Length: 171
Image (cartoon, rainbow, N blue to C red):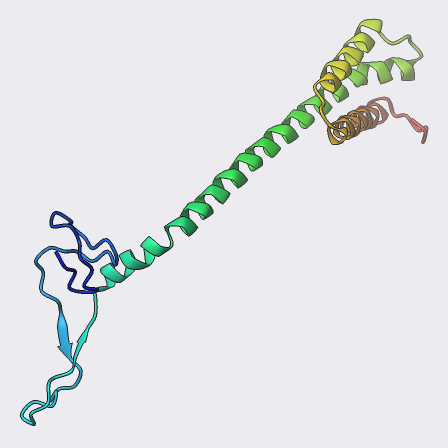
């Protein structure tokens, strides 16, 4: 079956043209005269402007750019994946920092009050840091852990200064 738009020879059972995508059902081609008179009555043939419908043009354009849409969707999926991984990693570091701050507080409180820090808490801090550090696979992760430890300890020191009214600038 020949396409009325591009004259491509399609199989007889095809529903749309394999070249331009036009619907091959028995639909008349919409034609409109180029001018109202069209040269009629003067022995000249009429000039017809044969154009596909808007939906056919969109189908034709989309067929050419399917690969571009697929690449765009692929890029979005990869970006979403790395965004989720980054969020989960950041949450993991925040949780670690909170645990360090929570465990450091009683140690600093003991130091401020002149008591010996509980060795069980110190062991918990060491165990937490060692467990967390053993899962690191890059230098950047180790640096992130060190920064989280420093932030957690600083939060605990600030809380101690407020709670115990510590004036020492080195604490």
